Amino acid sequence: MSRAVILTVLLAGLVVIGTSSPAWAAQLDAKINPNSDSSPFSMHYLKTVFIEYPNGGNLFDELRGKEWTVSGTADSSNPGVQDLMKKLNKKLSDDGSHAKISDLNVSYEFLLKGRNINTSIDYKVLLEGTLSGYVITKDAQKTLVDLGWRGMTVNDEINIDGVEINIPINMLRDQEPNVYAVFAGTEAEQVLHRPIINADFILEQPLTNWHFLFDPTGINVDAGTFGLDESISGFVVSSWTMGESSIREGRQVERVFTADVTADQKYTVRSVQSSDQANLAMIGFGALDILDGLEIAGVTPTPPEGYATTSTGDFPIMIVYGMAGMAAIAGIAFFIVSNRSLKNEKIGQQGIDPSRLVGYQTSASSGGYQTNRGEAQLRDETDYQQTRSVYENTAPQETTTPPPTTANREEAACGCAASAEMGSECDCEMQGSCLCDASCGCAAEICKENAQSMS
Image 1 (cartoon, rainbow, N blue to C red):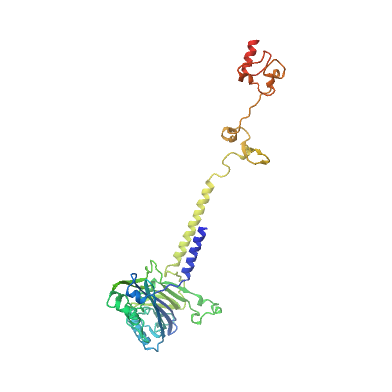
Image 2: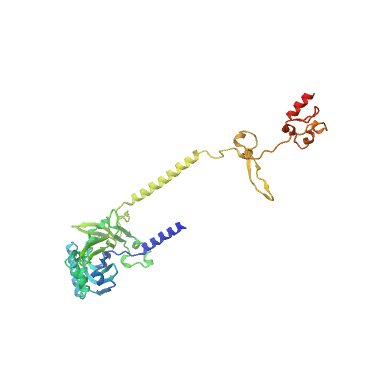
């Protein structure tokens, strides 16, 4: 029962973990079409700030039970969004990329929730737009695509409709001036001044460390019968994924920055960001390369003949097949050795030949109940002392009465004659004297002595 409960709990945990969506600091999703002048992308930025007051104090009185939300959306016609596009494109240019953001929509949401021991502020900013200018050169065989635009970062303030969306402490300045006054000029202000719109880590992680796969569905003859998108018809789709914490990609952990503030009480400020994640898809087969320090992909409609890859990048497929073959050979060798060992072992009957045994019943009845217990015994007496029944040592010994002699059956002048019929000739010997005359044939030694003395 306990094992079943443990398995149920583990299964439930796996289901919860497998179906929950993690909160990433920066999450990029883009699908690049080298045959088009522009392609869509989206970038999520998330950060959480905790203000802790375990000993109470003025911040406890100010924030406990308080809750508010600031949210909004804007498109590229908004002056604040235009300013954001300008600063993002400058950052891309500084990174060496030729790509530009030609259209952009911004959504933001800031949520404060006060509790008894801390207050949390969740910052969420979503950028959805169009990327253009990523094609470097193109000919009949190959297209070179710029991939150095991944670091979409802005370190300055971004104001959209009077709301500053990039520097976390500015939200406290505008919404909670009493809290801001406690943190202003302290180490906590430096922690809260780190920008939200930051994807530098996605750019710093080389694409060669990302997981690579390609989907050949588009080049199947009957792919069109399944409603395949025309944009990938006749092409494979390459995919690069970043976000796994491993030896190859490096250990990725959440980024936590902490600062203590001493005012009327000691307060702690923590800024928490999870590790970044990115999913980049490209129509065609993309082979990574570097051009003047810029990461690029050489894209062809189909993979080179004989090319095979795994999710770990350019790991040769023949090595994978070779390792599987070695495992199969080792398994076969194991079974051969085991089979030979079994054949070498002595098999068959290892004890007494069953044909030499005979069974007999050893149980006794009690009233109307009879058990079926029994045991086996050798037909002959060979090695009898080693195989004899254990019941012979414990069964009660029965007194055997020798058959009465001829003299016993005669009516002689023998004091034991009367007891001879009952098999108790030993009475004379037990009494220490003989009551018999010389004609008595009593078997008792004392009677034999008496008979000899009277003859």
